[in-house]
Image (tube, rainbow, N blue to C red; front, top):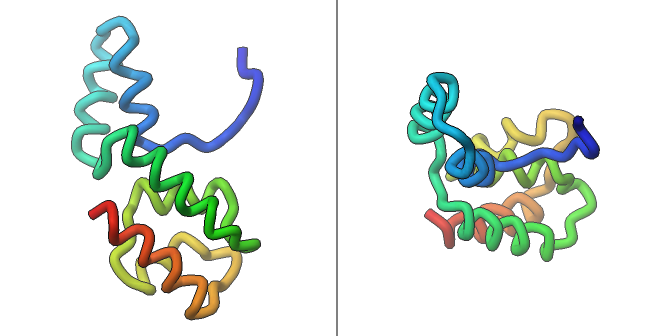
Length: 103
């Protein structure tokens, strides 16, 4: 039963999957996650905390999760995440500066 809906990073999902029983579907999911997870779960949590600490009004939970999953390298990558709002240059640079620490 779903108690609460909240976005999760691919790194967190990978950590949760490791604790589940091994079935064919779980194997497929693990292979998928290996291709796309760019950061370890503990580092993802630290990055999430740093992004939250920026205290930017436009930066919502789902944006943070996508930033962690994608680890954008430049402004154009970052703007793809923020398709519903636009960041000013200062906000974007703050976010990219934090992300660069985890590459």
